[in-house]
Length: 116
Image (tube, rainbow, N blue to C red; front, side):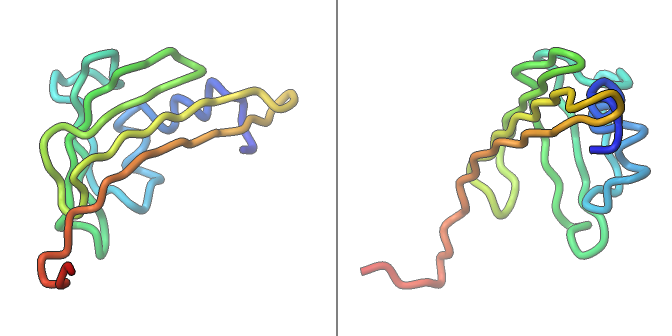
C-alpha cells in the first residue's frame, strides 16, 4: 500500500473514514459510538451499490493498533453462516506497507439445490 502501516490501519478501522473510500459499504459504525473499534466492540456495516441490501454485525476479538485487527460475525448475515477475518499491517519501506487479509467464511446452504 502506498502509505505507512499506521495510516493504512486507521483508514480501514476508523469508521467515518472507511465509508468515504470503501465501495463495498455505504455506512459503518461502532455500536457504542466510538470512532474506531476495540476488543469486544460490535460494528455494523451496510453494503453499497448492488450490495446495499446486505448488512453484517461484527465483534472485534483483537485490536492492536497499528498492527492487527480481527473480527467475527455476530448473528446471521445472508449469504453467510459464519464469517471471521483478520487484517495484519506491516511496514514495507519508509512510506509503504503491506496488508495481509485472512478470512474464513461459511456459505449458507442453497435450499433449492437437491442434495443426494
